[in-house]
Image 1 (cartoon, rainbow, N blue to C red):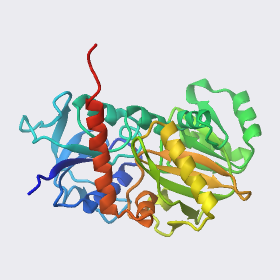
Image 2 (cartoon, rainbow, N blue to C red; image 1 turned 30 degrees about the horizontal axis):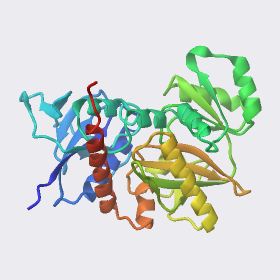
Image 3 (tube, helix red, strand yellow; image 1 turned 180 degrees about the vertical axis):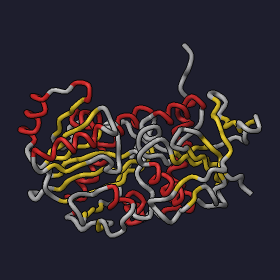
Image 4 (cartoon, rainbow, N blue to C red; image 1 turned 45 degrees about the vertical axis):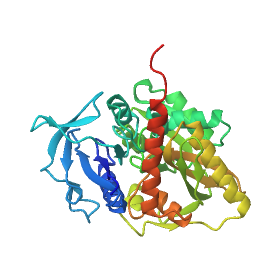
Length: 363
């Protein structure tokens, strides 16, 4: 019998997207073929403590998106750089070796290159983008600049910094972008801290909310049109799924609509578009993936204007894997089941690790 791969699923994290991560991890674990994989769960609490859990019982209130949380009985762990081993701090000994790590972490301290750097130091293969791709994908300003440099059309934006307040810059940015506009933290996802500003008096509260999550905030122009999403899979030769569409049932596709309220948005996977537009969505998605130095997976979000123009809004390097998340839904619509998708992502992680191991490290 072929040996099962030991897969460590990382979830939770020090982020406002902590609960989303727990729900995504549960779905990833359920999709893994138990004949192929032995799964251990490493939950990261809000204080940054790593704990080992049984894959069957790592969360409490699993069916309640608002109350889901890590259980308190996990054994504390540490990762030893260079050894590739997780250390049980209570028993003072290493766990059995892990073959691959699957980070299911959203937001800062998980999706932004920090965990990826730690896994690189430990010499462990892991699913998803590397340090640079993760960091670029997390910072919306850097992402948009990279996309623009690659010739990918992006939404117009301006950047504000907490410690470099410039009222004149704010006024000129609002005048240039027009109203309505969006205000959002530069380094966060899942629409956390995002506001749609319709009038100037609403701007102060929107900025206060966004700066509560980040020292850098983006103002983005409002693009009328349809919200299109596309999933990308691969390393050196990425491929794009059929595109889907999000139809928010409120002002915009909020955190609640994405992860809590199953009626918060209509999800069309795939969406009925002309062949020409489908091909263009896929081309722009793959170009965005490459421009941001991604690997493994990413979801690309675009706008389709009434005149048929496509504009890339942003890219997500660890997309949601909840029951209503578009990344796996679009691959299912494209002929790749959830279980096969997990297989592909793990294989891509191992392939990339082997390729990097061939690089010279001496002069």
